[in-house]
Structure formats: C-alpha cells, structure tokens
Image (cartoon, rainbow, N blue to C red; front, side):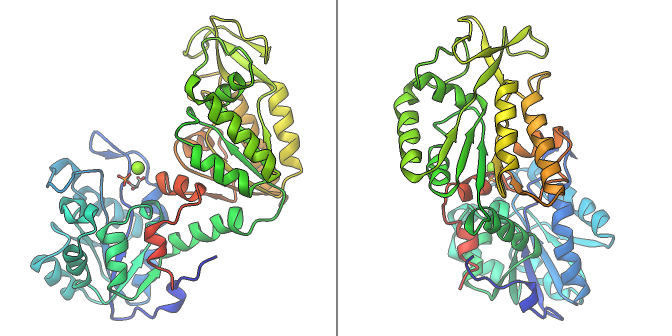
Length: 397
Ligand code: 3PG
Ligand code: MG
C-alpha cells in the first residue's frame, strides 16, 4: 500500500487543522436521510479535538457549480455534527477569506468550526491554486478524511494537500486499509461480485478486476448482456445489444488472465418490472419472449454460495437482481446473509461499496456484519477500476 501519514504521525495540539470531510449527505425535504458519513467522520474530529487541535471542517455539498445556491448550504450540517460529536460546532458562511480566517484564528484548542460549501466557489472543481491558497491560509496542517471525494482533483482535496503538511484522517485510513486488504494485497482466492445494469459503465472495472481476482461473478442486468452475447435469448430483459462484442472480449481476456467468470445458471423471469409481478424460475434457454429476468435463480445462488465458502476475500459491487422490489431481492439477500455468516466465522474478508450496493446490503440486514462497507460511491468504483485517486495520491510521499 502506498505510504501516507496518519494521525499517528501528527501532534495537533494548538494547531489549526483543516479537515476535508465529505458532508455530501443524502437530504430529502431539508432533512438528512442517512447519517452514515457524519457518524464515520466524527471519530476523526473527536480524536483531533481531544488532542487539542483547532478543527476547521470543510466539505462540498451537492453540485452548486460555483454559485451560492441556498438549498446547498452546509449550515444544516452544523447541528447534525454538533449532535453527533456531543460538542458545539461553529459556522462561517464562507470557506475562505477574511471572515473564515478570523474565525479559524479565534478557535481555542479542542474547538470545532464548520465552513460553508467549498463548491460555492467555482475554483473548487477547477482546482484553482488561488482557492487552494485561500484554504491553506486558514490552517497549519491539512487532514483529508474524504475518501469518498478523493476521485475529484479539487482545490480542497488535491490542491491544498500540496500546500500544507498533509495527513489521512481515520476514515480515509480505514478505507485505504480495507481496500488494500481486499484488492491490493489480498488473501486468495479472491471473489468479486459485480452487478448493476450496464456493462458499458463498468468496462474498466471488469477489466481491472479480471486481472486481479480469481473468480468474477457477474449479476444484475449486465449478466443478461453476457448471456445474450453467448447466444441465449433473453426476452424482454434489460440488456445492451451493442455490447455483445465487448462482453465476449471481456470473457476472453479474463480467461487469459486465469480469472474464472461466473455467469447465472438460471433466472427468475417476470411479466413486468413491478413488485410481485407474476414470475417463475427458468433455465438459460427458457426465457419467454415476453418476460424479463429480474433476479438470478436458486441454482445460481447455490453455485455462488459454494464459491464463497471456498474464498478468503470478497469484493462486492452491485446487487444480483431488482432488490428494491419483492421478491426479486431473493438472490441478493441470500448471498449477503451467507457473506455475513462467513465473515463472522472468520473465514472471509468481505468488502462492499459503490452505487446502490450499500442500500442492497442494508436491505439484507448485513451492512454491519461485513468486514468493511465503504462510505464512497464514485470513488469506490474508480478504485475498483484501478485508477489513481488524486485526493489519495496527494497524501502520499
Ligand atoms: C459522493 O457523494 O459520491 C461524493 O461526495 C462526490 O460527490 P460528486 O459526485 O458530486 O463529486
Ligand atoms: Mg457522486
């Protein structure tokens, strides 16, 4: 794993610490609907504060594109942070400039300040050096705890890390260690499960995984594209006809890499995309022309469970079926439960994340029972693609 400094290498007492967080939380009708990112961030803030740091938290929220969009203010996060931390959090309605500097300089050891949305400045997404300088003026050191925003080379993730002594926060450290144990330096055999709708959005991911894992299980609607590419009729199932050639290339490349690709053995087909739509289990050549596959069948589940029993490491991105609508969550839930049991028995290291994987694992009731569930969406996917994350790279060296 690349070397980076952590909070173990920092004595923050009396120092102004700029902490890049990811407070891009899901919000509906002005209410935070999932506190996970705040809950995972708070240990870093609490540790810094208890060691006497003057903590200045910054983050983006949503995509205001350089404008002060009132609904995208971070102000509502002030209260949520304070409640979770159990201590007061100040707020400044800009993330750089005289007012932010004055507030940062007025902090006492152990106090916490939250800055307004970094994306209110157009320079954030452009990684503008002037904005990065503005951040650097606020603090003595920089701590990045926003793994989930590390795929963005922005002023508050990448730019400022070049200007101040930089460290990984505890959440960043946790993510990097978990991911390294899963793909960087894993115990074998490694199984990857990749689901989701489209092969076209996961080309790099499939390519990278097939060069790293021993077994690559393909589920979700993208499995239909592979099955169709192999000549099976898939009826009205979601699939990408223009990707058949690519799917065959992926299969051939995996074979060359010694990676076994596992496709469904049977399917649950339904009349329509709706909960409890009339459905049945069919073999690969039994998909009626007017029906669609919404889940993999019991023979596939049994096959996957057996492979998991023989595995040491699992990387999971994407559900098997349309898990949001019953009963097409069956395969995802059955596999998730097995993963949880194997993990608890100490037989399997299991890491999941990206896209709707976290909601699928939560739906199955196992998100607390995996070895690690990433707090990242896009960053987790880019990491699975084998890409360098600029926010992480800037901490190295
Ligand atoms: C996320 O929620 O995935 C991160 O906060 C990054 O957000 P972005 O996709 O708007 O850059
Ligand atoms: Mg995103």
